[in-house]
Amino acid sequence: MGVPPQVLAIDLGTSGMKAALVAADGTVTGWAERPVPLVVLPGGGAEQDPVAWWDALAEVVADLGRLFPGHLRAVTTICSSTQGEGTIAVDASGDPLTRCISWLDMRGAAHLRRQFGGFPAYQGMSVAKIARWLRLTGGMPSVTGKDPAAHMLLIRDEMPEVYDRTATFLNVLDWINLRLTGRTVATVDSILTSWVTDNRRAGDIRYSPSLVAASGIDRDKFPPIVRCTEVIGTLTPRAADHLGLPASVRVVAGAIDNTAAAIGAGTIGDNEAHLYLGTSSWIAAHVPKKKTDVLTGIASIPCAIPDRYLMTALQATAGANLTWLRDKIVEYDDPIVSAGHVSRDEGTIFDAFDKIIPSVPAGANGVLYTPWLYGERAPVDDPHLRAAFLNISLDTTRSDLLRAVFEGVALNTRWLAGAVDRFLGAPVPSMVITGGAARSESWCQIFADVLGIEIRRDANPVIVNARGAGWIGAVGTGMISFTDIPALARNDHVYTPGPEHSRYLEIYDIYQDLHKRLAPVYRRLNRPTT
Image (cartoon, helix red, strand yellow):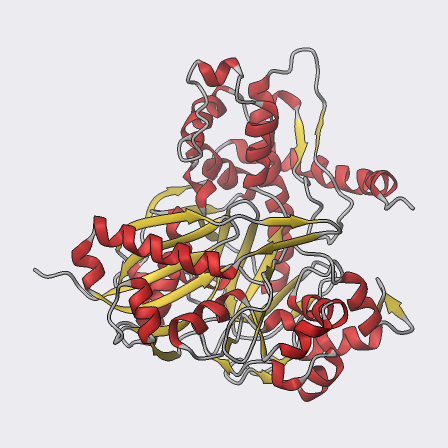
């Protein structure tokens, strides 16, 4: 039997370029990656070189060709999932005029306030303008400056010669698609955080003339908008030569990472939630209507399914807490590492942790951990919050601290899940868990116990974005439909709440009280100094 048609699924994150070969049934063959450096600049700047992405893509495709030549020859489609909120100014030839201004870059915050200030104001932004954004788009620019609305103003005001030469501002996904096809477009989700679209009709996302006029950016510098499933062209001869693929390969527009993950998790139906557990985490579910909860920072936004929105509730740090624990507490010369009990290899760190976690009872022998290493996004938007261990005693062990970290992230997710239930109008009874950190069996069980619901683990959680891009590509080229995906999704284990659930209910009450008591303290400790 021959190799079925393959989608080359591109997964471009902040850490680097990844790619996989995905069949229409979701089978993933092969995985290759290359790191791409992040350039950190003074004053809150963070950039990446788009050409480095393009070069890395050729390298990972070559890797796949060496390892799986038959599958690479079967590629008929390319579809991408990328990091969002990046901004690249390109000239009339499509060449980048700057490095990509990353979603981590905060240099545009002051320019955003100058452009959108007014009285009365909230965090320096006109309340009237905020109301218009919420009504039309479902959200508003980040006051931190970490999205294209601010990035474009930064270029306009501080790099006027670049602004004058800019033909179009593109997000990360859009630039990759331009390099592949020679066509300049944005998708319904990649354009979102420019905050210039009218999103009130899911099937008809379009630019809002009033928002474009108010943005401070020339109208002709915004690209045309397409659906995530649209075939936007075939490979240009130059791109085909760069990748070693036929020029006949079709390119489907694709999606940004959280949109793709929702497809890759198989959670296609209304209110079917998934929990993504990576460096950060989120709960997401497709919903039929546009809606925003201003108090909790949860909104439904345009997504890959043409007649639906994606409710997204984002938390700032999840797996990042384990990375911090590994790199700052269990350091490279730690006896535990040298004894082989904890591996430095990120691929096996969860196996090592899973040997320790069950040795500590639920509740971590009284130790509590708040996982706010980088503030919080939802269900409260508070950049001042910080992480803490509480109730440490002379009897506390490092294993207690480890379990407390796992439990703290789960307790924080329980806090978020309550807001999600209210947003959806009904409790979520079951959730798919995916993302790299879902490899920990202990953590999956803790989530089931803390949330008190069934947790279904993705059978291959590390490649959820690539699988999502593969399925979006397969839908776009007619190989499958979105309604086929739930039957194709695979879970390898179902975790149900155990007797520890009642114990966690008591701890959760304390956890909520801790936030109320500590939030004012953190505001005093972490307010900006003058």
